[in-house]
Length: 323
Image 1 (tube, rainbow, N blue to C red):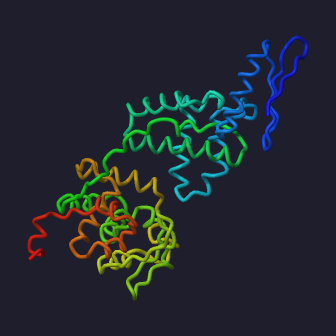
Image 2 (cartoon, rainbow, N blue to C red; image 1 turned 60 degrees about the horizontal axis):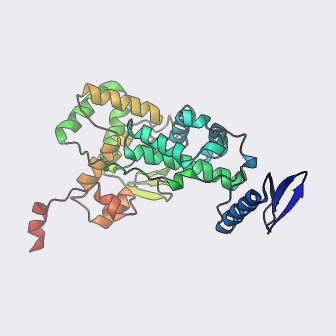
Image 3 (tube, helix red, strand yellow; image 1 turned 120 degrees about the horizontal axis):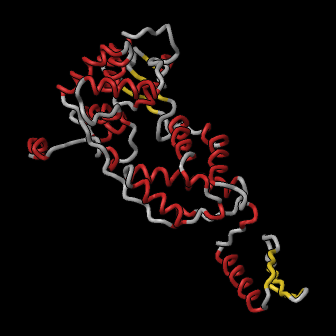
C-alpha cells in the first residue's frame, strides 16, 4: 500500500508491504512520488524488487573473497575452483560496485573473454559469477539481481575426442620413464582403468582389493561411489609401487602431474595431448570388449550421451553383428 504526505514543501512517497521493510523517498512533485510508488509496487508484485541499500558499499571482489573463504574449501574441486576464482579476483570486473554490476557489465566481460578463451571456459566462468551472487542472495541477505541470468550464454565448444594411437602411447611411456619414478606407472594405470586423474591420485591402498582385483572409489566426480575392475596389467602396475611408504597409491599433487605430463608430451613431440585423453583412449579401447551398460559401470558415466563422446564405433565394425 502506498500513501503520500507533504512535508516542508516536498512530497514523501511511502510504500508499506507485509514481509518487506517500509520504503520511502521524497520528491518535489506529487506526480513523481506516485510514479515511484507505482514502480516499486509493480516490482514487489513481480518479485523483482532489489533493495540496494544493503550492498551499495560492496565491491564484487568482496563477494568473491567471502565465497573463497566460506564455500570453496567445502567443494570437491577446491584447488581448481580456488585457482579460477583468484584469477577472477584480478580481473577489472571484480572492482565493480555491486549496485553497478549489471547485465551489460557481465555481457561485456563475456565478450572480452570470448576473444581469449573457448566458449566452454567462458560458460564455466559465468557459472562461477552466478554461484557467487546466488550465495550472496541466500546467505548474506544481499538483495541483488543476478545479471548472469539475463544474458546470452556462449555456445560450449565441442567435447574433446582425442584418442592416442599405439605409437603415441609408446612415445609417451618412453619419455615418462625418464622423467619421474611415478609418471610411467601413473600413465599405464590410467590407460588400464579409464579412471580420472583426480580419482587415481585419491586412490588409497586401503581401498584396493588385490584378491578380487577391485579398486573402490568412495567419492567420484558425479557424487557417487564406484568400483573399478582391475586388469592384470593394472594389478602389475600397483604391485610395482611401494605399498608401505604412503597412504595413497600415487602420492602426487594434481599440479605436479599436470606440469610433468606437459613436459613429457613435449619431449615425446606429441601435440594436443591432455592427461584426460588417457581416459578417453582407455574407454575407447574397452568399448570393443564391453557393452554400453558394462562400460558405463567402469567409467562411471550416468548419461549415455556423455559416454558416446568417448566411444568410437564404426558402422563397418557392426556389419558382422547385424546378420
